[in-house]
Length: 358
Picture 1 (cartoon, rainbow, N blue to C red):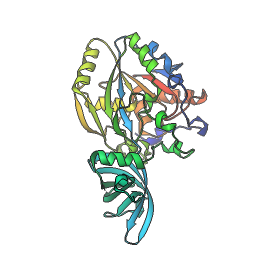
Picture 2 (tube, rainbow, N blue to C red):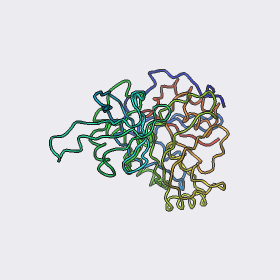
Picture 3 (cartoon, rainbow, N blue to C red):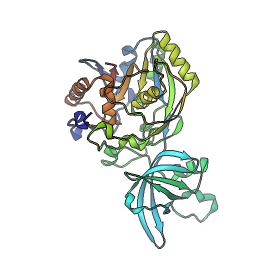
Picture 4 (cartoon, rainbow, N blue to C red):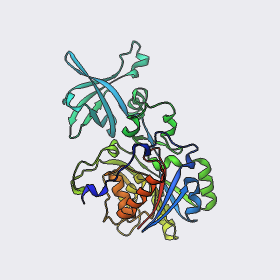
């Protein structure tokens, strides 16, 4: 399909730079194809679902994955910014480098400062460039591995707010909690599963009282989620792979809920993409552990997910393509036009939508 079919005009004023408080006070546009639109708030979610439905939430935890360093080459140095996006081993990450043209295979990058005490050695971290790919993609092998590398990244890294927020204000301490879900557990994401940012413990309590269960999966969101689609046709776009896991226990619980007539409600496009990657042709969900690069566009036949809760996405993005596949392109264009005209807040810190499958 032509990528320009997924374009729309979004005013700068629609981009949210901070989340609302409390989290579940955000607005939520309910979309029932072909043309049913209803303005609600996230706190209304229990009333919009049925007893027996199951929420599926992504429990990944965002790490401070933006690093600033010096490329060291003989007697010269150059400043580079590194955005980690996928772990490939105990001491190896794939990353996006900026400016990538300053890096060659074999170059060493130093992050942090040299320490005077061995007790503070983790204030310095070195990495070697092992590969260079397209679009600034590089493979880095670090001087630490495992938990020691994780600790060094935590000390030296910066929380990776999306570019449409980071370009307008600096990251601060408040973002360290705002940009994590209240149920974040497994470290490894470089972007938050933002639909989950709307949940509070009180909302979970009310969902429990309504008889709506929840299950957790893990998909470590990569920085590729921020990359624009530069191709003119969707068939020419390459998705970056992300690692995900659906446990045997979760797969069994979801299959049993469906057998009883319950619906699977994916909280976020990350949960949906992982569930569809784990789904069999008959719609059952199998345990899953590994990479997924699933790219969902209109014409895709959904096998696992019945309802999707998600935020509002960028024009021409793979995520707007996904929601258009789920609820219909014309329906989503009308929904987004309504959202823009009604003052909904867009993107990571913005409002939510609840989409029922076309």
